[in-house]
Image 1 (cartoon, rainbow, N blue to C red):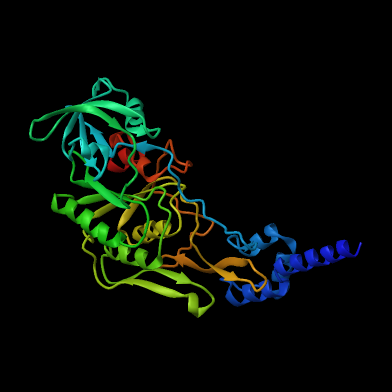
Image 2: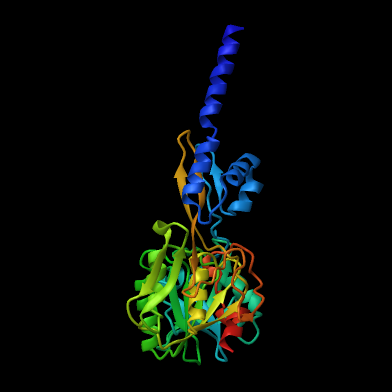
Length: 371
């Protein structure tokens, strides 16, 4: 009996230690929250659970000891051969062959012409069948017949096992002076990659660009600032972090006009365009630098911070919001495109290789943007 009572007391003490202190939660929230709140309302919110806490801060969460709240980032759903094609009257033009891919290993290069895929020519192959051949279950393959730019014949089988897609890549849209640029995130090195990739396309003759932000999952504020600066028409603010606390408030600016200030821009968005990518699109549109095509964004522009608790676990909460230079706050509202276009795969957490489809000209959002 004594042993059972002792075990019960030890268990109760352990639970008490692991349970967050309501007073500590309240004090942290009042000290760091993005918006002001009454102490009584905060106490009640923590006592009432997730639903009541969400009324004060939709991004707030009490994280139990030993657990982490992970963001729902895109996951790989399809695999490819590292080849992006564009249908032309002569065949399928290879507009992008990725380094280290099966397509490159087979000898294919940008500008080569794929005449047949699984025995079908560009004239008789349904777009959906071509897309499924190029991008699908990992390990599958498809046959091809091609002709290089030098006139050399190539043929064989390509296996879908490529996964090393760069964070920034692009190509020149055939028959136009428009560059396509895929921007997957605002990670370290993104500005340099944009400068290099888009710079090469401008040098090749691009006078406008379509920047694909679909399922762009964000990144760092400093990287967003530097990337926006590449497109700024003049020096000055490109976005702001705002909070009732001076320590979390900051203006992010371009030091000068960017190298791509003269490009006409169209931005592609969808329900997976979140956080920094939403601010990127909104700020460029506000500056008169871009129009937006595609789907509505979710409105997730909160800057959150996680605070460790004395009894273990943590409190994640909003400490600031990202807004455009003019103060547009997209939180909970999202960004509505100028040209709404239904995307068949919007809503899926498709991996970056699915934007655009491997048969890029069959992408309805990209096709609408090019018009």
